[in-house]
Image (tube, rainbow, N blue to C red; front, side):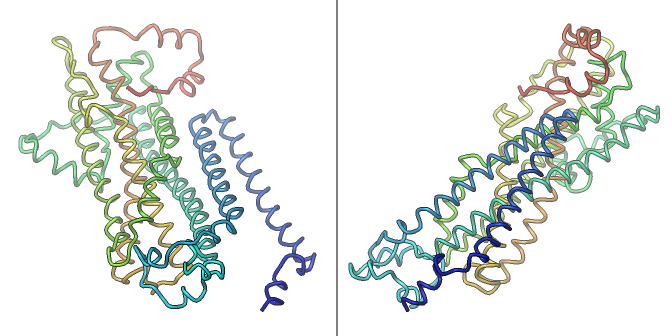
Amino acid sequence: MGQEEEAQSLALTPTWVVASVCLVIVAISLAAERLLHRLGKVLKFNGQEALFSALQRVKEELMILGFISFLLSVCQNLINRICIPESAARVMLPCIEESKAREDAAKLCKRKGEVPMLSEEALHQLHIFIFVLGVVHVLFCVTTLLLGGAKMRTWNKWEKEIQQGRIKEREKTPGWMKPSAVRWIIAFFKQFYNSVGKPDYQVLRSAFVLRHYPNRLDFDFHKYMVRALEHDFKEVVGISWYLWLFVIVFLLLNINGWHTYFWLSFLPLILLLIVGTKLEHISTRLAQEAAECSDEASGNPWTKPCKEHFWFSHPRAVLHLIHFILFQNSFEMAFFFWVLATYGFDSCIMENRSYALPRLAIGIIVQVLCSYSTLPLYAIVTHLLSRLARACCYWTVARSQHFETFDNIISPRITLVNSLYVPYF
């Protein structure tokens, strides 16, 4: 037995094997680093500062994951030497205990009548889980940006039609749609098929351009919204401390018989439906108010504070919820694929097959709906709302000195690219 353990050590491993493995790992690492560096240069060259900041946050998260992996590797022997009472090792198990687990206990802990707190195999599996979580989270972030960009491209078609003069008047809201309960029901279902309709986009765009750029009716509002989406994407990329706390709580409550993984998979879906309905309701309401404001030639301006449209008058709370939804969904998918690769589809951690398949379907639905519908909807509502509210409140005033300075000094191209940032409230 001792000879077998010694034969597995690095001292008795052929040097060409060690060198080959190191060569492959170093080559892949350097290629990934150069790819990210090149991508950052492209984003900087194109003036996409928000996406560049998002890329920097991704690098930071990868560094954190690498540091976690480093700590797990360095502290492996130390963790294996930590012993706990056998009775404590039987509490809050994710699966029913098997006798083999006790036979593999470390000799040091056996002498004390205890068991290892975390076996070498369990530590290795945890190591893999951290890696899978990082990879899946990055892939889901890329998917979010691609789906959001696909949604924006449909708005680009409307933008071209509007600039070509093919504008249709917005139809008046039917009387049966005016009750509050009916508007909320319509907002709930609208997020699934037409989160931002052409009439809504048209009236919101017109209100924005006429108030801020009355002499530039060819203002590229679509490019403005692309910048807004990139800015929001930067905010939802990283893994904040409270998200790591959520991971720890989930690992703590993943107890056999509780079906925590199954019930928790509904959390992002429920939150997404609530957030999507709220944003749809705000979008419709805002478009109607903007249309009324644009039609007025005199009278009292609309002075209702824009923050009151949101919960607790705090628009960024919605962005935090979207951030949590996207991360929690990527965490669910990472956990699913990790269990599938480590333990198999029929393992106790995967639980019943009737639970696993719905979880996978829910994860796909949440990712597509949030990326393609909810996040772009949030961008057009919040980044437009502050300026639109200001415009309607001061509808008799010409453009502010800030915009006049930009128009007189900076070229239209630079203005469009670099000044389309809307600060939060």
